[in-house]
Length: 196
Image (tube, rainbow, N blue to C red; front, side, top):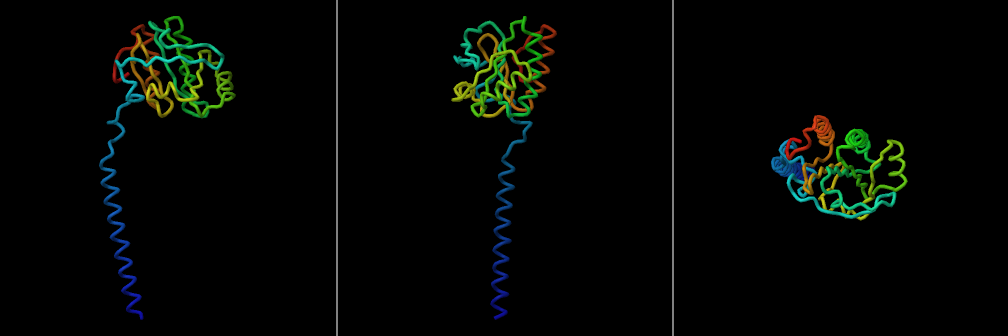
């Protein structure tokens, strides 16, 4: 009887070890296929790449203002995809608000695009808390986000002369907005650049 139990225990142990080895080698193989973050593009999406035409949209702000992107032709337009529940988005909004205040006379237009999961009262509360003065669109059906291929926030898209100038996603937005502040302050203006 003890011999049977010993054989069963050995067989079970061998099966567990074999399954563990197979699982480990599968995980290692899958991890080897993943590219490091540094090699992946920093653009907000496959749509929002420099030089691509900016998809036009028409929408109504939370204040009832009609906004059509093509009506802003000739201006520098910054689209900020965000949500009030997103901590990095709230932090970034303060930097963008400061930038837009200083650059308002230079033709910079900022449009907030609030995620569908945002509640209108939270959007209004955030606007008041940070004294945001530019239009906010509640993209409830993801129409604008889909046109720009945005699937995560925060995301920024800079449009110049009807074309995507540059875009960023996630924490890259903070460094990117600082570079934009410097370029606009020095009157160099934004340029097509992967490093921007």
